[in-house]
Amino acid sequence: MKILDIIDGVFPISSAIENAYISFAEMTCSAVAVVTDQFRNGERVVGFGFHSNGRYDQQGILRSRMIKRLNQAGAQGFLNAEGTNVDPFKAWQVMMANEKPGGHGERSVAVGTLDMAMWDLAAKLEGKPLYRLLAEQYRDGISDDSVYVYAAGGYYYPEKGIEGLTEEMQGYLDLGYDTVKIKIGGAMLAEDCRRIEAVLALLESGQTLAVDANGRFDLALALEYTQALNRYDLKWFEEPGDPLDFELLAEVAAASRNPIATGENLFSMQDARNLIRYGGLQPERDILQVDPALSYGLVEYLRFLRMLTDNGWSHRSCIPHGGHQFSLHLAAGLGLGGNESYPGLFFPFGGFADDTHIKRGRVELADVPGIGIEQKKELMPLYRRMLADHGW
Image (cartoon, rainbow, N blue to C red; front, side, top):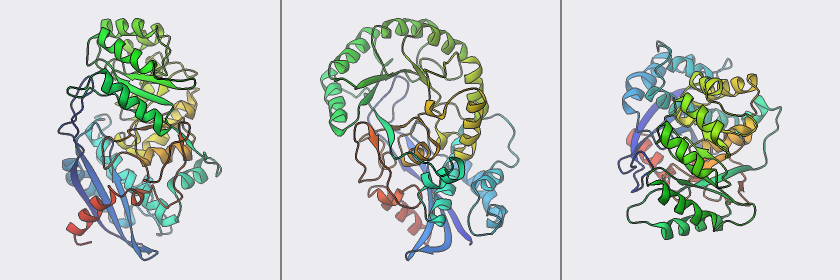
């Protein structure tokens, strides 16, 4: 087996929405393709990867360091012992050669993008969905039949008031989700409480609401919001302050009657370990949202899961950020607590296979090799154009 090419492209995922901190109007995404000389059912086998929303494209780091190192190593530098498949762990070591400890920021996104492609490729060459490959390697072949997913939305849109918010949330409930999430912190507290109460009024028994501040608050405002939110029965209160301010988080966690969720902006096992040590979170209550596609990929995420186990946390406490097929496969294959979903947002990269249906807040995965990018009619043409532009 030979790797013939590794290519990347930059694509917009722009949308006229805002959370409490940023606008997505100019957001971009990197996509990569790892091209092989192998064919299955008459189609060339290619591994596809991309990264989650919230971080801009990584073309500079990808081209100047990560792809360059993989090309210099040659495929033999990251194939398995038999030479029949890629070894994502070897590829990770090649990409991270000559990188100093720390500095977990944009490079973690570049590595995570390529790591996704390596795992997609590895599963395709085995002829298996990624979740099944992971279950065989790490759970004695046991995978979850379905995965809990929640609908993340409730952004601040221009000229969209509470009526538009409730229409959006009702649409998610009608799709089959039983947990919805909205943004807070982009308006005054009184207005955010009105938004929360309007959505809670929609919910029936068994349906829940989560809220997300996107790291907006300082300690005083975080505690003010915490006390206000304690009046409500919420699924969780997400990222109240800066993601690395563990002292703030610990104070909020101690004051909160609702579960705390955080971690999407931590990009290494080491940062996540500090969260566990110093963030005041409770293993039996709180939620960890570390995103593999933004944090050095699945190779690093497996280290993160081992650290959690060593510290008395369950894999079920993990509900990754990102809302895409890669983390959905990880949830099913590794026994995580669920996965985020962005219905109608961040296309063409966000979302699951086109024939995915939400049933009582859960989804079943498509039984196709890899992570199933080929099952997304809006995303696959993008990759085909990218390949054609490079002669494939």
